[in-house]
Amino acid sequence: MPQTVIQKIIARAASKRTVDVGDKLWCKVDLSVMRDFGGPNVILDYKEAFGDRPLAHPKKVAITFDLHLPARDTTVATNQRALRDFAKASGAMLFDIETGVGQHNLLEEGYIHPYDVIVGTDSHMNLLGAVGAFATGTGTTDLVASMATGKLWFRVPDTHLYTVTGRFGRRVGAKDLILRILGDIRTEGLLYKAVEFEGPTIDRMDLSGRITLLSMVTEMSGKIGFTPPGEEVMEFLRKRTGRAPRRWDADPGATYEARREWSVKDLPPMVAKPHSPDNVAPVDTLKGVHIDQSFIGSCTNGRFEDLKAAADVLRGETVAKGTRLIVTPATIHVARQALAAGLYRVFMDAGAVITNQSCALCTIGHPGVLAPKDVTVSTSNRNFPGKIGKGGEVYLVSPQTAAASAIYGEITDPRGV
Image (tube, rainbow, N blue to C red; front, top):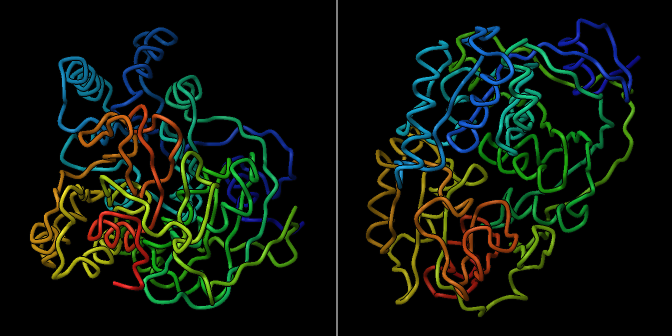
């Protein structure tokens, strides 16, 4: 029976030749990940359920610090201390405050492989589908179970197939595409579904663009998304993991629950208006909307390519008076690359504040939150009420649109800058 990508991954993890949609199967878990946010509850629940029982596979458990960096108060510091102590006692891997966004850092450090099954306390784990891994967010109970037993059960989801054609116009890219798709599919359109993206547009997309695309599968309530293995991605995996990666193509004739097509030929920069990621409109319909702040970063748009796209807009320009621009690299690797390429100089000359590598303004736990009535454009992935400050408004945009808007202090089409 021809299999989709997710069926092939689950079949391998469950030691089956094939699986059917709807099957419930115990799968081997290759990596269990907790963050500094939520991680303390994981270790408390683990100790309550299993006491001093050793982890099933200590080197398949990772603790990543990516939200409250460095600790902003004694509560956060105490929680981080507890996680460091647990890592030392259990043998789990620890990625401390200098590393950055967990999924990105694990990818860069070579811990992610095609066909891996990965669970974590971050709802955007599924961006790792860009390299053929089945990565998904879980609650504390499931994560604890995976740490203790090395396995977890999953129901095999249906898969949708999305085909994308055409070439992006100037200063239009993956974020604009996924916002357009979100506007069509809506926030519940992929509820417990897998999705495979294909087509010439996807084939040409670099790893950064694929991560942007797949990180927002979460905002459509999807379980996991995949892009096909391009040569750039395969070479990235060879260098980072030190092994020859296995391709993750669906079988010819695999069954899809739904198929959709989009063209980016005439796609304009897109914006998700408050207060939902699927409240989408072309940037031209919002030109002139005042902003107080612009944020460039997050697991969705914090790669080097994202920062460079923003810097290309900002070069020789300055941030509008009364407007704040905050730039955050996703990881220490991205920060070093941006520094070496001179991007920090561009941002500082423009009047931006560059923060340490982290998740940053994805949530209210990071410096830069909004006051009531503040308006920000953000390259993050969610704009629900109160996400980064009660009474504030968040417009989701691409790095190019965020940079252009910072220059003028209002939502601006980057194609005109």
